[in-house]
Image (cartoon, rainbow, N blue to C red; front, side, top):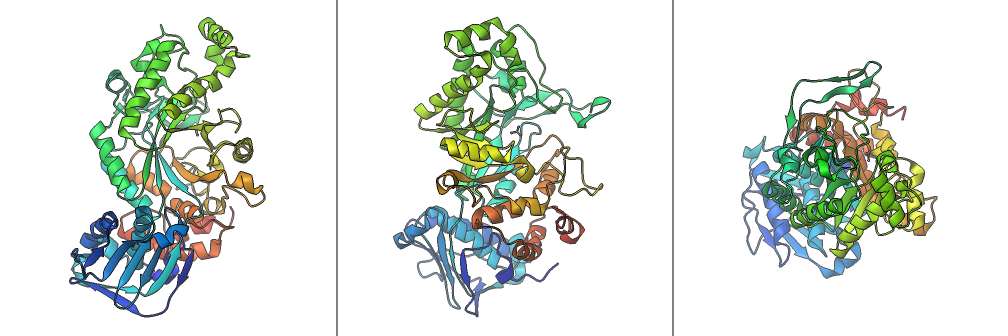
Length: 525
Ligand code: ACM
Protein backbone atom coordinates (compact mmCIF):
# COMPACT_ATOMS: atom_id res chain seq x y z
CA UNK A 1 0.00 0.00 0.00
CA UNK A 2 1.51 3.39 -0.89
CA UNK A 3 2.45 5.60 2.04
CA UNK A 4 -0.37 8.12 2.34
CA UNK A 5 0.75 11.65 1.56
CA UNK A 6 -2.27 13.94 1.71
CA UNK A 7 -0.28 16.72 0.12
CA UNK A 8 -0.02 14.60 -2.99
CA UNK A 9 -3.31 12.82 -2.92
CA UNK A 10 -6.32 15.11 -2.52
CA UNK A 11 -8.85 13.98 -5.09
CA UNK A 12 -10.41 15.96 -6.67
CA UNK A 13 -7.58 18.46 -6.61
CA UNK A 14 -8.39 21.62 -4.68
CA UNK A 15 -8.35 24.94 -6.51
CA UNK A 16 -5.78 26.66 -4.29
CA UNK A 17 -3.67 24.96 -1.68
CA UNK A 18 -0.63 25.77 0.42
CA UNK A 19 1.21 23.78 3.06
CA UNK A 20 2.71 26.00 5.74
CA UNK A 21 4.17 22.99 7.62
CA UNK A 22 3.24 21.62 11.01
CA UNK A 23 0.55 19.22 12.16
CA UNK A 24 -2.73 19.25 14.03
CA UNK A 25 -3.42 16.35 16.37
CA UNK A 26 -6.97 15.04 16.75
CA UNK A 27 -7.58 12.94 19.83
CA UNK A 28 -10.36 11.83 22.14
CA UNK A 29 -10.56 15.27 23.69
CA UNK A 30 -10.93 17.08 20.38
CA UNK A 31 -14.37 18.66 20.18
CA UNK A 32 -16.37 20.17 17.35
CA UNK A 33 -17.93 23.60 17.44
CA UNK A 34 -20.67 24.35 14.89
CA UNK A 35 -21.64 27.98 14.46
CA UNK A 36 -25.29 28.68 13.57
CA UNK A 37 -26.24 27.01 10.31
CA UNK A 38 -23.19 24.75 10.28
CA UNK A 39 -24.76 22.04 12.45
CA UNK A 40 -25.62 19.63 9.57
CA UNK A 41 -22.02 19.69 8.32
CA UNK A 42 -20.71 19.20 11.85
CA UNK A 43 -23.06 16.25 12.20
CA UNK A 44 -21.72 14.81 8.93
CA UNK A 45 -18.14 15.25 10.13
CA UNK A 46 -18.96 13.45 13.37
CA UNK A 47 -20.80 10.67 11.51
CA UNK A 48 -18.11 10.07 8.90
CA UNK A 49 -14.97 10.67 10.90
CA UNK A 50 -15.93 9.87 14.49
CA UNK A 51 -16.64 6.11 14.45
CA UNK A 52 -14.13 5.35 11.67
CA UNK A 53 -11.32 7.14 13.47
CA UNK A 54 -12.47 6.00 16.89
CA UNK A 55 -12.83 9.56 18.20
CA UNK A 56 -15.91 10.97 19.96
CA UNK A 57 -15.57 14.42 18.32
CA UNK A 58 -18.11 15.67 20.83
CA UNK A 59 -20.00 18.89 20.18
CA UNK A 60 -18.74 21.69 22.42
CA UNK A 61 -18.83 25.50 22.35
CA UNK A 62 -15.06 25.68 22.73
CA UNK A 63 -14.25 22.91 20.23
CA UNK A 64 -11.02 23.25 18.23
CA UNK A 65 -12.67 22.03 15.06
CA UNK A 66 -14.83 24.95 13.99
CA UNK A 67 -17.39 24.95 11.20
CA UNK A 68 -18.98 28.23 10.21
CA UNK A 69 -21.20 29.76 7.59
CA UNK A 70 -19.53 32.90 6.33
CA UNK A 71 -21.19 35.27 3.86
CA UNK A 72 -17.80 36.70 2.95
CA UNK A 73 -17.16 33.50 1.04
CA UNK A 74 -20.23 34.10 -1.13
CA UNK A 75 -17.98 34.51 -4.15
CA UNK A 76 -17.16 30.80 -3.87
CA UNK A 77 -20.73 29.88 -4.76
CA UNK A 78 -22.94 27.14 -3.36
CA UNK A 79 -20.22 24.50 -3.08
CA UNK A 80 -17.02 26.45 -2.50
CA UNK A 81 -15.31 26.43 0.90
CA UNK A 82 -12.23 27.59 2.71
CA UNK A 83 -10.28 25.30 5.05
CA UNK A 84 -7.51 26.29 7.41
CA UNK A 85 -5.74 23.64 9.44
CA UNK A 86 -3.27 25.11 11.94
CA UNK A 87 -1.31 23.41 14.74
CA UNK A 88 -4.02 24.25 17.28
CA UNK A 89 -7.29 24.33 15.38
CA UNK A 90 -9.20 23.58 12.21
CA UNK A 91 -11.52 26.15 10.65
CA UNK A 92 -13.91 25.20 7.84
CA UNK A 93 -15.95 28.04 6.31
CA UNK A 94 -18.41 28.35 3.45
CA UNK A 95 -21.22 30.65 2.42
CA UNK A 96 -23.64 27.70 2.07
CA UNK A 97 -24.09 24.45 3.99
CA UNK A 98 -23.26 22.50 0.82
CA UNK A 99 -19.80 24.06 0.72
CA UNK A 100 -19.23 22.84 4.27
CA UNK A 101 -20.23 19.30 3.20
CA UNK A 102 -17.56 19.43 0.48
CA UNK A 103 -14.98 20.66 2.98
CA UNK A 104 -15.80 17.80 5.36
CA UNK A 105 -14.73 15.38 2.61
CA UNK A 106 -11.43 17.21 2.27
CA UNK A 107 -10.88 16.88 6.03
CA UNK A 108 -11.47 13.13 5.66
CA UNK A 109 -8.86 12.96 2.91
CA UNK A 110 -6.33 14.79 5.08
CA UNK A 111 -6.51 11.95 7.59
CA UNK A 112 -4.55 8.75 7.03
CA UNK A 113 -6.56 6.16 5.05
CA UNK A 114 -6.82 3.86 8.08
CA UNK A 115 -8.85 6.57 9.79
CA UNK A 116 -11.54 6.13 7.09
CA UNK A 117 -12.18 2.48 7.67
CA UNK A 118 -12.43 1.91 11.39
CA UNK A 119 -9.61 -0.60 10.95
CA UNK A 120 -7.39 1.24 13.39
CA UNK A 121 -10.09 2.78 15.54
CA UNK A 122 -8.08 2.10 18.66
CA UNK A 123 -5.29 4.44 17.58
CA UNK A 124 -6.51 7.18 19.90
CA UNK A 125 -5.10 10.08 17.95
CA UNK A 126 -4.48 11.15 14.37
CA UNK A 127 -2.44 13.88 12.74
CA UNK A 128 -3.48 16.18 9.94
CA UNK A 129 -0.96 18.27 8.01
CA UNK A 130 -1.46 22.01 8.38
CA UNK A 131 -2.92 23.43 5.22
CA UNK A 132 -4.71 26.40 3.71
CA UNK A 133 -7.28 25.55 1.02
CA UNK A 134 -9.71 27.57 -1.07
CA UNK A 135 -11.76 25.30 -3.24
CA UNK A 136 -14.48 25.82 -5.87
CA UNK A 137 -15.86 23.36 -8.42
CA UNK A 138 -15.57 24.16 -12.11
CA UNK A 139 -18.88 22.51 -13.01
CA UNK A 140 -22.12 22.52 -11.00
CA UNK A 141 -23.34 19.06 -12.20
CA UNK A 142 -20.95 16.24 -11.35
CA UNK A 143 -22.91 13.07 -11.39
CA UNK A 144 -23.15 9.33 -11.48
CA UNK A 145 -25.93 7.37 -13.13
CA UNK A 146 -26.80 4.02 -11.67
CA UNK A 147 -29.08 1.73 -13.66
CA UNK A 148 -31.22 -0.08 -11.10
CA UNK A 149 -33.78 -1.05 -13.76
CA UNK A 150 -31.68 -3.69 -15.52
CA UNK A 151 -30.46 -5.01 -12.16
CA UNK A 152 -32.20 -4.11 -8.96
CA UNK A 153 -29.74 -3.08 -6.24
CA UNK A 154 -30.68 -3.17 -2.56
CA UNK A 155 -31.00 0.25 -1.01
CA UNK A 156 -28.02 -0.37 1.30
CA UNK A 157 -25.72 -0.58 -1.70
CA UNK A 158 -27.12 2.72 -3.00
CA UNK A 159 -26.32 4.38 0.33
CA UNK A 160 -22.77 3.08 0.06
CA UNK A 161 -22.52 4.38 -3.51
CA UNK A 162 -23.70 7.77 -2.27
CA UNK A 163 -20.93 7.75 0.33
CA UNK A 164 -18.32 6.90 -2.29
CA UNK A 165 -19.66 9.66 -4.53
CA UNK A 166 -19.54 12.15 -1.66
CA UNK A 167 -15.90 11.28 -0.93
CA UNK A 168 -15.16 12.45 -4.49
CA UNK A 169 -17.35 15.57 -4.20
CA UNK A 170 -19.81 14.30 -6.81
CA UNK A 171 -23.21 15.88 -6.31
CA UNK A 172 -25.87 14.16 -8.46
CA UNK A 173 -27.03 10.54 -8.21
CA UNK A 174 -29.07 9.89 -11.35
CA UNK A 175 -31.25 6.90 -10.58
CA UNK A 176 -32.42 5.08 -13.72
CA UNK A 177 -35.55 3.58 -12.16
CA UNK A 178 -37.48 2.14 -15.09
CA UNK A 179 -36.72 0.40 -18.34
CA UNK A 180 -37.88 -2.42 -20.60
CA UNK A 181 -36.46 -4.99 -18.18
CA UNK A 182 -37.91 -3.71 -14.90
CA UNK A 183 -39.87 -1.03 -13.06
CA UNK A 184 -38.45 -0.33 -9.58
CA UNK A 185 -40.51 2.51 -8.08
CA UNK A 186 -43.92 1.90 -6.53
CA UNK A 187 -46.75 4.07 -7.86
CA UNK A 188 -49.91 3.88 -5.73
CA UNK A 189 -52.16 4.76 -8.66
CA UNK A 190 -50.71 1.93 -10.77
CA UNK A 191 -49.81 -0.95 -8.43
CA UNK A 192 -49.16 -3.44 -11.22
CA UNK A 193 -46.06 -1.45 -12.24
CA UNK A 194 -44.37 -3.17 -9.32
CA UNK A 195 -46.45 -6.33 -8.87
CA UNK A 196 -45.96 -7.22 -12.55
CA UNK A 197 -43.33 -4.83 -13.90
CA UNK A 198 -40.60 -5.41 -11.33
CA UNK A 199 -40.11 -9.08 -12.23
CA UNK A 200 -38.73 -10.70 -15.34
CA UNK A 201 -38.62 -14.42 -15.99
CA UNK A 202 -34.95 -14.58 -16.96
CA UNK A 203 -32.10 -12.40 -18.25
CA UNK A 204 -30.00 -12.38 -21.35
CA UNK A 205 -26.48 -13.73 -20.72
CA UNK A 206 -23.86 -11.47 -22.23
CA UNK A 207 -24.19 -9.52 -25.46
CA UNK A 208 -26.08 -10.99 -28.41
CA UNK A 209 -23.66 -13.18 -30.40
CA UNK A 210 -23.73 -14.60 -33.92
CA UNK A 211 -26.08 -17.36 -32.72
CA UNK A 212 -28.43 -14.87 -31.13
CA UNK A 213 -29.12 -14.28 -27.47
CA UNK A 214 -28.61 -16.78 -24.65
CA UNK A 215 -30.48 -16.62 -21.36
CA UNK A 216 -30.09 -17.68 -17.78
CA UNK A 217 -32.93 -19.52 -16.07
CA UNK A 218 -33.34 -17.21 -13.08
CA UNK A 219 -36.13 -14.76 -12.47
CA UNK A 220 -34.89 -11.29 -11.54
CA UNK A 221 -36.98 -8.97 -9.43
CA UNK A 222 -36.98 -6.10 -7.01
CA UNK A 223 -38.55 -2.77 -6.23
CA UNK A 224 -37.99 -0.09 -3.65
CA UNK A 225 -40.56 1.06 -1.16
CA UNK A 226 -41.27 4.76 -1.08
CA UNK A 227 -39.85 4.80 2.45
CA UNK A 228 -36.56 3.40 1.11
CA UNK A 229 -36.42 5.96 -1.67
CA UNK A 230 -37.15 8.78 0.77
CA UNK A 231 -34.40 7.46 3.03
CA UNK A 232 -32.00 7.47 0.08
CA UNK A 233 -32.99 11.05 -0.79
CA UNK A 234 -32.45 12.16 2.81
CA UNK A 235 -29.16 10.29 3.17
CA UNK A 236 -27.87 11.82 -0.06
CA UNK A 237 -29.04 15.32 0.96
CA UNK A 238 -27.14 14.99 4.23
CA UNK A 239 -24.04 14.59 2.04
CA UNK A 240 -24.92 17.39 -0.36
CA UNK A 241 -26.03 15.03 -3.13
CA UNK A 242 -29.25 15.37 -5.13
CA UNK A 243 -31.02 12.23 -6.30
CA UNK A 244 -32.41 12.83 -9.79
CA UNK A 245 -35.03 10.20 -10.66
CA UNK A 246 -35.49 8.95 -14.20
CA UNK A 247 -38.72 7.49 -15.54
CA UNK A 248 -38.21 6.44 -19.15
CA UNK A 249 -40.83 7.67 -21.65
CA UNK A 250 -42.19 7.03 -24.29
CA UNK A 251 -39.86 4.12 -25.18
CA UNK A 252 -37.97 1.77 -22.84
CA UNK A 253 -41.39 1.06 -21.29
CA UNK A 254 -41.85 -2.63 -21.90
CA UNK A 255 -42.07 -3.41 -18.15
CA UNK A 256 -44.87 -0.83 -17.79
CA UNK A 257 -46.65 -2.29 -20.81
CA UNK A 258 -46.44 -5.79 -19.33
CA UNK A 259 -48.30 -4.36 -16.34
CA UNK A 260 -50.74 -2.15 -18.26
CA UNK A 261 -51.07 -3.27 -21.90
CA UNK A 262 -53.78 -0.68 -22.49
CA UNK A 263 -51.12 2.06 -22.30
CA UNK A 264 -49.36 0.66 -25.33
CA UNK A 265 -49.54 1.83 -28.88
CA UNK A 266 -51.28 -1.50 -29.46
CA UNK A 267 -53.54 -1.73 -26.39
CA UNK A 268 -54.71 -5.27 -27.17
CA UNK A 269 -51.23 -6.78 -27.18
CA UNK A 270 -49.98 -8.80 -24.21
CA UNK A 271 -46.27 -8.48 -23.47
CA UNK A 272 -43.80 -9.86 -20.94
CA UNK A 273 -41.28 -7.77 -19.07
CA UNK A 274 -38.42 -7.86 -21.54
CA UNK A 275 -35.64 -10.40 -20.91
CA UNK A 276 -33.27 -9.23 -23.65
CA UNK A 277 -30.83 -6.31 -23.84
CA UNK A 278 -30.93 -3.75 -26.62
CA UNK A 279 -33.53 -1.42 -28.04
CA UNK A 280 -37.12 -2.64 -27.85
CA UNK A 281 -39.56 -1.17 -30.34
CA UNK A 282 -42.70 -1.37 -28.17
CA UNK A 283 -43.68 2.11 -27.06
CA UNK A 284 -46.44 3.99 -25.30
CA UNK A 285 -49.54 5.02 -27.21
CA UNK A 286 -50.53 8.65 -27.65
CA UNK A 287 -54.12 8.41 -26.36
CA UNK A 288 -55.30 10.52 -23.44
CA UNK A 289 -55.07 7.68 -20.89
CA UNK A 290 -51.33 7.57 -21.51
CA UNK A 291 -50.89 11.20 -20.49
CA UNK A 292 -53.06 10.62 -17.41
CA UNK A 293 -50.65 7.78 -16.58
CA UNK A 294 -47.58 9.98 -17.08
CA UNK A 295 -49.05 12.70 -14.88
CA UNK A 296 -50.01 10.29 -12.10
CA UNK A 297 -46.60 8.62 -12.11
CA UNK A 298 -44.72 11.90 -12.13
CA UNK A 299 -46.87 13.34 -9.35
CA UNK A 300 -45.78 10.46 -7.14
CA UNK A 301 -42.20 10.77 -8.34
CA UNK A 302 -42.19 14.49 -7.45
CA UNK A 303 -43.65 13.65 -4.06
CA UNK A 304 -40.75 11.32 -3.27
CA UNK A 305 -37.93 13.19 -5.02
CA UNK A 306 -37.58 16.92 -4.24
CA UNK A 307 -34.98 17.34 -7.00
CA UNK A 308 -35.70 20.28 -9.30
CA UNK A 309 -34.52 18.10 -12.16
CA UNK A 310 -36.70 15.15 -13.17
CA UNK A 311 -35.49 12.94 -16.02
CA UNK A 312 -38.04 11.49 -18.43
CA UNK A 313 -35.75 9.56 -20.75
CA UNK A 314 -36.74 9.99 -24.37
CA UNK A 315 -33.96 8.13 -26.17
CA UNK A 316 -33.88 5.02 -28.33
CA UNK A 317 -37.54 5.29 -29.14
CA UNK A 318 -38.23 3.87 -32.60
CA UNK A 319 -41.36 5.54 -33.96
CA UNK A 320 -42.21 2.69 -36.35
CA UNK A 321 -45.14 1.60 -34.16
CA UNK A 322 -46.69 5.07 -34.38
CA UNK A 323 -46.07 5.23 -38.10
CA UNK A 324 -48.03 1.97 -38.54
CA UNK A 325 -50.83 2.89 -36.16
CA UNK A 326 -53.99 4.53 -37.55
CA UNK A 327 -54.73 6.02 -34.10
CA UNK A 328 -51.25 7.54 -33.81
CA UNK A 329 -51.36 8.86 -37.37
CA UNK A 330 -54.73 10.41 -36.62
CA UNK A 331 -53.40 12.02 -33.45
CA UNK A 332 -50.40 13.42 -35.33
CA UNK A 333 -52.71 14.95 -37.95
CA UNK A 334 -55.08 16.33 -35.31
CA UNK A 335 -52.14 18.01 -33.53
CA UNK A 336 -50.94 19.50 -36.82
CA UNK A 337 -47.70 17.49 -36.82
CA UNK A 338 -45.98 16.79 -40.10
CA UNK A 339 -45.55 13.05 -39.43
CA UNK A 340 -46.14 10.38 -36.78
CA UNK A 341 -42.40 10.55 -36.01
CA UNK A 342 -42.95 14.13 -34.83
CA UNK A 343 -45.13 12.69 -32.06
CA UNK A 344 -41.89 12.03 -30.16
CA UNK A 345 -41.04 15.71 -29.62
CA UNK A 346 -44.71 16.48 -29.06
CA UNK A 347 -44.98 13.73 -26.43
CA UNK A 348 -41.84 14.85 -24.59
CA UNK A 349 -43.00 18.46 -24.78
CA UNK A 350 -46.39 17.66 -23.23
CA UNK A 351 -44.89 15.74 -20.35
CA UNK A 352 -42.08 18.28 -19.97
CA UNK A 353 -44.65 21.10 -19.68
CA UNK A 354 -46.41 19.20 -16.93
CA UNK A 355 -43.14 19.14 -14.96
CA UNK A 356 -42.52 22.82 -15.64
CA UNK A 357 -46.01 23.65 -14.35
CA UNK A 358 -44.97 21.94 -11.13
CA UNK A 359 -41.80 23.97 -10.81
CA UNK A 360 -39.48 21.23 -12.04
CA UNK A 361 -37.00 21.13 -14.91
CA UNK A 362 -37.43 18.22 -17.33
CA UNK A 363 -34.29 16.37 -18.38
CA UNK A 364 -34.10 14.17 -21.46
CA UNK A 365 -31.54 12.14 -23.35
CA UNK A 366 -30.96 13.78 -26.67
CA UNK A 367 -30.45 11.80 -29.86
CA UNK A 368 -29.28 14.73 -31.99
CA UNK A 369 -29.10 17.70 -29.65
CA UNK A 370 -31.96 19.47 -31.36
CA UNK A 371 -35.15 17.44 -30.99
CA UNK A 372 -36.41 18.35 -27.52
CA UNK A 373 -38.27 21.50 -26.49
CA UNK A 374 -35.97 24.19 -25.09
CA UNK A 375 -37.23 23.92 -21.52
CA UNK A 376 -35.44 20.55 -21.38
CA UNK A 377 -32.01 20.24 -19.90
CA UNK A 378 -30.48 17.64 -22.16
CA UNK A 379 -28.04 14.80 -21.66
CA UNK A 380 -26.04 14.50 -24.86
CA UNK A 381 -24.69 10.96 -25.00
CA UNK A 382 -24.54 9.67 -28.54
CA UNK A 383 -22.14 11.95 -30.36
CA UNK A 384 -19.67 14.62 -29.23
CA UNK A 385 -21.26 17.09 -31.65
CA UNK A 386 -24.67 16.73 -30.01
CA UNK A 387 -23.66 18.52 -26.83
CA UNK A 388 -22.56 21.53 -28.82
CA UNK A 389 -25.64 21.45 -31.07
CA UNK A 390 -27.84 21.46 -27.99
CA UNK A 391 -25.89 24.27 -26.30
CA UNK A 392 -25.97 26.34 -29.48
CA UNK A 393 -29.71 25.90 -29.68
CA UNK A 394 -30.05 27.22 -26.12
CA UNK A 395 -30.40 24.09 -24.00
CA UNK A 396 -28.71 23.61 -20.67
CA UNK A 397 -26.50 20.59 -21.34
CA UNK A 398 -25.03 17.73 -19.39
CA UNK A 399 -22.34 16.31 -21.63
CA UNK A 400 -22.09 12.54 -21.27
CA UNK A 401 -20.54 11.27 -24.47
CA UNK A 402 -20.76 7.50 -24.21
CA UNK A 403 -17.22 6.90 -25.42
CA UNK A 404 -15.91 8.90 -22.46
CA UNK A 405 -18.42 8.49 -19.64
CA UNK A 406 -20.09 5.06 -20.01
CA UNK A 407 -18.31 2.89 -17.48
CA UNK A 408 -20.08 -0.28 -18.60
CA UNK A 409 -17.52 -0.43 -21.42
CA UNK A 410 -14.43 -2.36 -20.36
CA UNK A 411 -11.60 -0.28 -18.90
CA UNK A 412 -9.00 -2.11 -20.97
CA UNK A 413 -8.72 -4.77 -23.65
CA UNK A 414 -7.33 -7.23 -21.09
CA UNK A 415 -9.24 -10.49 -21.70
CA UNK A 416 -9.45 -11.11 -17.96
CA UNK A 417 -11.78 -8.11 -17.58
CA UNK A 418 -15.41 -9.08 -16.91
CA UNK A 419 -17.99 -9.15 -19.71
CA UNK A 420 -18.78 -5.59 -20.67
CA UNK A 421 -20.77 -3.58 -23.17
CA UNK A 422 -19.28 -4.43 -26.61
CA UNK A 423 -17.00 -1.72 -27.94
CA UNK A 424 -13.49 -0.37 -27.54
CA UNK A 425 -12.39 0.18 -23.94
CA UNK A 426 -13.07 3.41 -22.11
CA UNK A 427 -9.78 3.79 -20.27
CA UNK A 428 -9.05 5.77 -17.16
CA UNK A 429 -7.25 8.26 -19.36
CA UNK A 430 -10.18 8.57 -21.77
CA UNK A 431 -12.39 9.54 -18.85
CA UNK A 432 -9.87 11.98 -17.44
CA UNK A 433 -9.27 13.57 -20.84
CA UNK A 434 -12.97 14.24 -21.42
CA UNK A 435 -13.84 17.90 -21.78
CA UNK A 436 -17.60 18.45 -21.38
CA UNK A 437 -17.27 22.04 -22.66
CA UNK A 438 -14.15 22.34 -24.80
CA UNK A 439 -12.27 25.64 -24.75
CA UNK A 440 -12.68 25.92 -28.51
CA UNK A 441 -16.43 26.55 -28.16
CA UNK A 442 -17.79 30.09 -27.92
CA UNK A 443 -18.19 31.20 -24.31
CA UNK A 444 -22.00 31.43 -24.55
CA UNK A 445 -22.20 27.76 -25.52
CA UNK A 446 -19.68 26.66 -22.91
CA UNK A 447 -21.68 28.48 -20.26
CA UNK A 448 -24.69 26.28 -20.99
CA UNK A 449 -22.84 23.11 -20.07
CA UNK A 450 -23.86 22.32 -16.50
CA UNK A 451 -21.48 19.43 -16.21
CA UNK A 452 -21.04 15.76 -16.79
CA UNK A 453 -21.63 12.39 -15.17
CA UNK A 454 -20.49 8.79 -15.39
CA UNK A 455 -22.96 6.08 -16.39
CA UNK A 456 -23.03 2.56 -14.99
CA UNK A 457 -25.59 0.62 -17.00
CA UNK A 458 -26.09 -2.83 -15.55
CA UNK A 459 -26.86 -5.30 -18.29
CA UNK A 460 -23.59 -7.03 -17.41
CA UNK A 461 -22.74 -5.73 -13.94
CA UNK A 462 -25.01 -7.72 -11.69
CA UNK A 463 -24.39 -6.63 -8.14
CA UNK A 464 -22.76 -3.94 -6.03
CA UNK A 465 -19.27 -5.43 -6.24
CA UNK A 466 -19.31 -5.62 -10.01
CA UNK A 467 -20.72 -2.10 -10.19
CA UNK A 468 -17.99 -0.71 -7.95
CA UNK A 469 -15.34 -2.60 -9.91
CA UNK A 470 -16.53 -0.91 -13.11
CA UNK A 471 -16.86 2.47 -11.45
CA UNK A 472 -13.47 2.65 -9.72
CA UNK A 473 -11.14 4.24 -10.32
CA UNK A 474 -12.69 5.72 -13.47
CA UNK A 475 -15.25 7.60 -11.39
CA UNK A 476 -12.29 9.23 -9.58
CA UNK A 477 -11.09 10.52 -12.96
CA UNK A 478 -14.48 11.98 -13.84
CA UNK A 479 -14.81 13.58 -10.41
CA UNK A 480 -11.34 15.09 -10.65
CA UNK A 481 -11.93 16.70 -14.04
CA UNK A 482 -15.47 17.85 -13.33
CA UNK A 483 -14.35 19.55 -10.11
CA UNK A 484 -11.09 21.01 -11.44
CA UNK A 485 -12.03 21.83 -15.04
CA UNK A 486 -9.20 23.15 -17.17
CA UNK A 487 -7.36 21.05 -19.64
CA UNK A 488 -6.49 18.32 -17.19
CA UNK A 489 -3.25 17.27 -15.55
CA UNK A 490 -2.90 13.57 -16.28
CA UNK A 491 0.51 13.05 -14.59
CA UNK A 492 -0.68 14.93 -11.51
CA UNK A 493 -3.90 12.95 -11.42
CA UNK A 494 -2.16 9.58 -11.66
CA UNK A 495 0.25 10.57 -8.92
CA UNK A 496 -2.63 11.55 -6.64
CA UNK A 497 -4.60 8.45 -7.60
CA UNK A 498 -1.74 6.16 -6.58
CA UNK A 499 -2.12 7.48 -3.03
CA UNK A 500 -5.88 7.75 -3.21
CA UNK A 501 -6.23 4.03 -3.91
CA UNK A 502 -5.19 3.47 -0.28
CA UNK A 503 -8.48 5.17 0.63
CA UNK A 504 -10.42 2.97 -1.79
CA UNK A 505 -8.72 -0.06 -0.25
CA UNK A 506 -9.55 1.13 3.26
CA UNK A 507 -13.19 1.42 2.22
CA UNK A 508 -13.19 -2.02 0.60
CA UNK A 509 -13.79 -0.78 -2.94
CA UNK A 510 -12.90 -3.53 -5.41
CA UNK A 511 -10.57 -2.21 -8.07
CA UNK A 512 -7.65 -3.49 -10.08
CA UNK A 513 -4.18 -2.58 -8.81
CA UNK A 514 -3.21 0.45 -10.89
CA UNK A 515 -0.05 -1.09 -12.28
CA UNK A 516 -1.98 -4.13 -13.47
CA UNK A 517 -4.70 -2.22 -15.19
CA UNK A 518 -5.86 1.30 -15.66
CA UNK A 519 -2.54 3.13 -15.69
CA UNK A 520 -0.82 0.49 -17.77
CA UNK A 521 -3.68 0.70 -20.24
CA UNK A 522 -3.57 4.46 -20.26
CA UNK A 523 -0.61 4.73 -22.59
CA UNK A 524 -2.92 3.81 -25.46
CA UNK A 525 -6.04 5.85 -24.86
C1 ACM B 1 -28.66 5.46 -23.36
O1 ACM B 1 -27.50 5.06 -23.45
N1 ACM B 1 -29.68 4.65 -23.60
C2 ACM B 1 -28.95 6.82 -22.97
